[in-house]
Length: 320
Length: 290
Image (cartoon, rainbow over all chains, first blue to last red; front, side, top):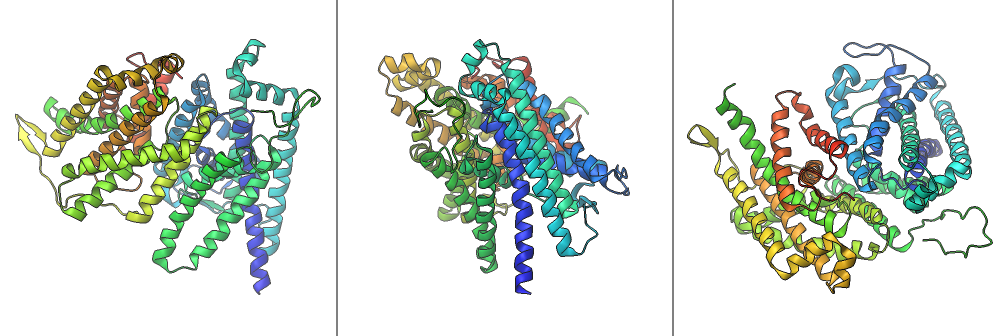
């Protein structure tokens, strides 16, 4: 029985690590390779979750829905919707320094939260959308958990291969050039605004997909399902600690940070109630402090960005 | 709806909340112009200031206005300390790294408030204050002194910036940092001074928000977007622009209720922000664009 619980917990954790790894990969496209600061990850995540939920759920009283499309359509829909939200924001803000994008993404995440809470005919407001289909959800509990973990890992692997391929392609080289020296890249005739917009939209689409995976895993999505600030910040620390600019680093960071985060939650839940509540905020404080320490002492993360291309003329460790 | 009603229920509350935004926006605009990054922990510093004042109010039994100077000093010290411990060593790195660090600081400051004071709403004084009526205008005392305090604080700051040696140094850093450094301005002192001013104004914004509404651990974070919208609307680096921007954002938020469902009040600031970035990124008073 003990073993069963442990195994169940491991599967659960595996699914969450997979979902967060997708978010970290999405952020890596935006921050690691294009230098774009997205502080509204939870917003794109929520858009993906709700889009997929609306597309695939059965009809219900008082809200649109009842499309009952296959789950895979919902997932592509989630990516499309997140990309669609990202487009105007990027269009307006990417002409300026990334500070403006940071503020605007905080804003868009806030607006998305307001819409989810108040547009009942779209999202069923506080009660959320329930009864979502889940692939292999008909199997018995353990097998279905394991099957979902398998699906998440396959999606993550596909995303990883595609993103990695893209980074080693000329596109990736161009993005890094824009990130590292905007003026030089512009002088080479690169359309900086357009390229940044591409990176921002690709990243947002992956975040939307992460949200869809989350919604179908829980078979429901409610406004309270995730704490927007905490989720956004966790993804940031995952990427920075794992190594921004390195896709394997993003995935490793997701695993490390999520394990620390959820194990510390189990530990603090053992405390008496009044301390357990405070312990939640102390954990938040420590995760904030962890970011400061990483930024100060190991800004390149556990797995630094690999030096690509011809190494004969570069001195190692000579990167800024 | 007649004119008086419009003024009583929308314009006056808008000007009051706008004055509070203005206090925060002035700090944001100074940090943005002199240190050249968007400081995302600004709202949570305001929360800290408000709760510091609460500690003084409950500890010594004095009024929140009397506690204001202590909150200002305390928050200014915290702001300088945060800069020394967390931001200073990032100065040589790309500025966006400091923006990221400030997001972490926002979370940390809020966590400290939540651990010490909890997450329930608090208030400085219990009970309902009825507004007095002057020539048909319904105004509460606290609304009058919020606006007066804002004008006084910003007025003193403006005199300091234009008349004193260090104020001029700060403006020089904002206009052209290389030239300012070449002419012998002490960068460290300017940075410290900027944080003292920004931190102090943050505390004032937080305390006045607490006086006019209530104290919550998310109060400051929720003000962040309107404060940034105000700073950009007025023009980054322009103190008088930040005040103008704050007042416009505050009034616009209150008026938005007439055309939008009230849930979307908070979206007004965001709409103003995007509109300005689209149409006139330098702001109304020709600030800088980073």
